[in-house]
Image 1 (cartoon, rainbow over the protein chains, first blue to last red):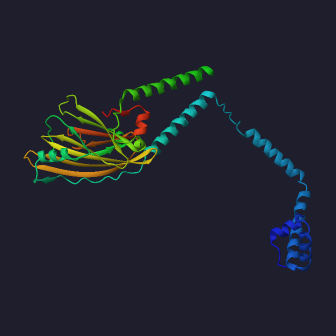
Image 2: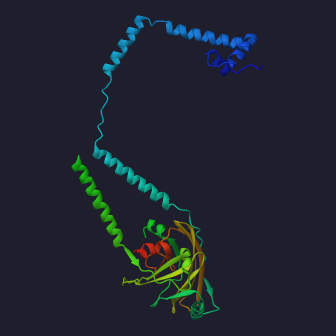
Image 3: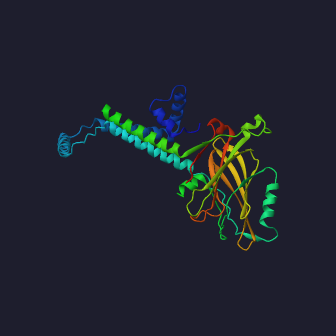
Length: 173
Length: 177
């Protein structure tokens, strides 16, 4: 038979192994030097622990410990008593609520970054006039036209900007 | 104790109602136009409302010119909008919305811009951007830049699902400026 592990031997020593396994282990330990030495060690350890419990504390030492504890108790500052009132609790709850709302707003508005494409500078197109462009656009199907009135003065060095509302508000424009 | 609690509740109620009132004061509601007859009612779950508000700002501080338009488009279907000023410029913006989750949309905004210069030549630019937005959120486009004094046109594009817009009784838009 293969030697049982230490956990099983410890359980055997503590009388925790039920029959018929107990009898099988007894037979093995009787014939196995290694296992019987382990059991012997457990027995020795057990004996030492029992001795430790039986020894009485020397009265002088006991007295000294008591005096030390009394002194310590006298010199220790009194534990402050916190009395939590309802308004304090309500204020704490409100504070936690605001922190929670703030955090959730921050988390939900921090969406994936948009794919922002760099806009190339304007190219001069000499092949056609603006009226031809307008004519071409107005003839396109499935498109809606919005007329913008007045005379516009357009800067030549323009830089078109397109932004999501959330980012527009964040930038404070 | 009870009187303190009552006071705390009163202060909180006043603060929340003031906040709600100021939020509502900045908000405009635009009625939805009838849906195009060629769009079947079975497709309303796929339908998007595109609200466009165009603002022309005057550099000398006059009241800005403003108009709004509401159009419909289907999921993954492009809607093209032409903004035309015969003398100076033409802009084409194409908006393609796509429903991702209940609370998020992906929209592709592509634009083309033509404008005439003082020596009568025509300049051309184009670009495209993807945005992940919440239903009812806006994209703000400054075709001529956003720096103060150089922003004659501001185009706000709000995309919402038809169902959401219909439920809330129209398109709710907050003031931009």
